[in-house]
Image (cartoon, rainbow, N blue to C red; front, side):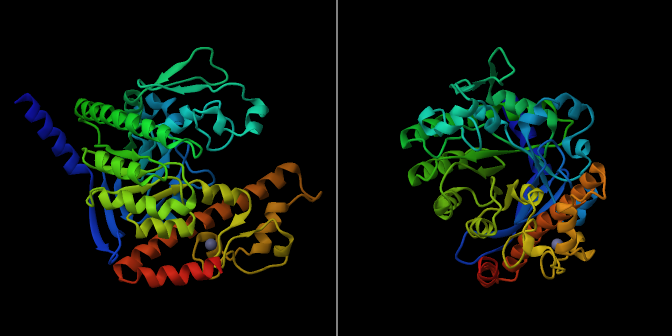
Length: 425
Ligand SMILES: [Zn+2]
C-alpha cells in the first residue's frame, strides 16, 4: 500500500508539470513538431537551446534572450554544482539566472571525466587514444578514473581524489532546480574499442537505474518544488547493435525524455539517430547534445530530435564568424572592410534590424587605432561581439522556427533542400 501511494504521488507530480505533445509529423520520417510543457514555460519544438555555462549566456542579456526567440537555456551542471546551495536559496535556476525560461542542466559527467585529459573533447580512459602532443603539453597522468561506483577525479589544485556518483549528480541537479536534468552517463572517446564501448554502455545502464531511483526519492522528498524531468543519455558510438540495445533498455525505463550523445564521426549521425529514435518511445522528447550546424539540425529533426544545443553560435560569434543564408563569413577578413550590406540578407535579428553593416561591425571588432584609449577599444570590441552573438543565435533559433513551420505546413523536405542548397552552395 505504501509503495502504491508512493508510485501514485510521484506519477501525479510528474503528469501535472511536465509533458510533451506532438502537433505534426514529417511523413515517412521520424521528425515531428511539438510542444514540451515545463513548470517554467512551454518549448515549441524543434528548437535550439542556447548554452549558458554558468547560468547566463555570455554577451546576451535576458531581455535580448527573449527578443530573439530563445525559449530555453542549458547550463553546466558541474560548474553550477559548486554554488548549488546559493541557487537553491535564491529560488530555482530559472529565477537565479534572471532569464525566466525553461532550463536544462547536464549531469557534470563530461567535466569530471575530462580532468587531466588535455584539450578538447578527449575523455578516453585509454591513454593510447589521447594525442601525444596533448600529453607533452602538461599532462603526465589522467586525473580521473571510472569505476562502478562512479568517477574518481581531482583537479590540478586538489591533493585528494573526490568521488562523483550518479546519486551526487541527482542531488546537485535537484538543488539547482532546472526543468530538465540529465542522468549521469559514461562518455567514451572516438578512439575507444567496441569492447570498451560495450562495457561503458552497460555501466551507464546501471548508473541510469541508480539515477532514476535517487531522482524519484528526491522528487518525493522535495514535493514543494517544481517537478524536474529526468532525461537518460544514450551512448553507443557508431555501433548499431549498441545503439539499439541502449534505446531498448533506457526506452523501457521511466525517464521523461532522452538525450542523444556520444563520440562518432559526422557521417554516422543520421544512422545513429534513426536507430535510436525508431526504438525510443514516440511520446517523449529527445535532445541532441552538442550539435547545431544547419545540416546536423536538419538531419536531427528528420530523424526525430526535438531540441538541440551547442556552444558554436556564441563561441564562433566571439571569433568574428557570422552565419549568413549564403554560408558563413569571417568579419575579420579584409574583404569586408568596405562591405556595407547587412550581416545576412533579410535577417530580422535586432542587430540587422538596427542596420548595422558588416563594415561597421568589423571596424568595432578590429579597432586598434591610436585615437582611442585601450578601454575604448575594449568597449568597441565588446559591442561588436554582442552584436554578432545576437545575430548568430537568432540565425539558428530562426532556422529551427522555420523548420517547425515547414513540418506543420507539410513542406519539410522542400524547405530543407532549398535552404541547404543556398547555404552550402
Ligand atoms: Zn541578423
